[in-house]
Each structure stands twice: as C-alpha cells, then as structure tokens.
Image 1 (tube, rainbow, N blue to C red):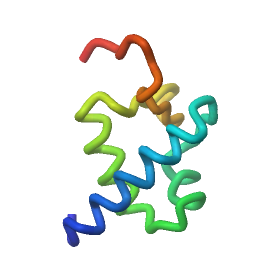
Image 2: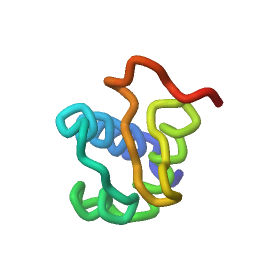
Image 3: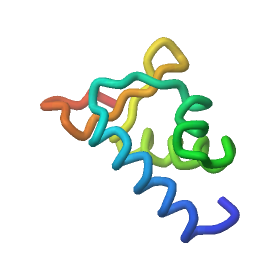
Image 4: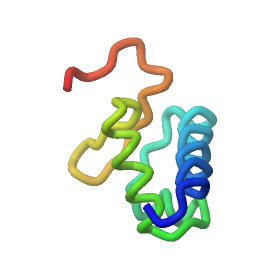
Length: 75
C-alpha cells in the first residue's frame, strides 16, 4: 500500500463501519463508495482484514464483518 498511515485509517473506518452496521451486507465497491475512499485503498484494507479473519466474503462479492460473530469461519 502506498501510504501506511492511510492504510491504518481505512482499516479503522472499515472496522467502525461493520461494528456500527453488523447486519449490513455490502460489496467491496459499495463499501468504497460509502466510505468515500478510492477502491484500491479499500481493496487493500479488505485483503488485510480478510487475512486477519475479521472480514469474510460471501457469494464472491458480499463482505461480512466478523467482529460480533461468536465463531469465526475456519481458515
């Protein structure tokens, strides 16, 4: 990612978004629009959060935050 401090900001924004809206299902593209962030920054942040097991993809496009989930999907 080009700017590490900005990456941390986008990651925090995504965490806050899914914590505040735990039942809202959005695509990566829609999330970028809602956060008013460039898609490439959101894509990188989503990849990092998926790697940490905090975000999951369903139906190849829908993102689901796992902060409130009792059990996380096995990796």
